[in-house]
Amino acid sequence: MTACLVGDFDPAQARELADRYFGRLKQNPQSPPPLRTREVEQQAEKRMTAHAETNPQVTIRYHTVADGHADEPALLVL
Image 1 (tube, rainbow, N blue to C red):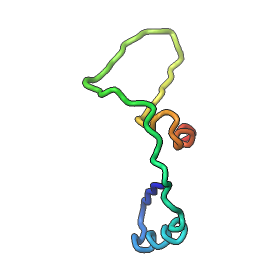
Image 2: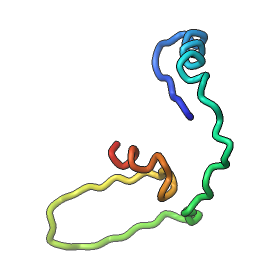
Image 3: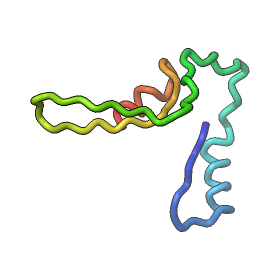
Image 4: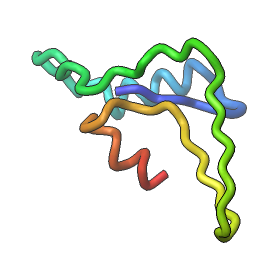
C-alpha cells in the first residue's frame, strides 16, 4: 500500500493514525506479478505534423502503470 499525504499535518499524528487503521494489514506473501508491458526507451523528441478537416480536440496522456495492473481501472477513471 502506498499513501501520499499533502498539506499541513503533524507527521507523528499521521503515523499514529496510519498504524491504528492500517497496521493490522499483513504484507502479501506473494511477489507482485511481472510487468506485462515495457516502455521503449525514448531517445529523441518525436513529432508529427498532419492536416485534416476535423473538430479541435486535445488528448493528454501520462506515463502510468503497466497494462493489467490492479491500479489501472482507478487511474483510467481519474
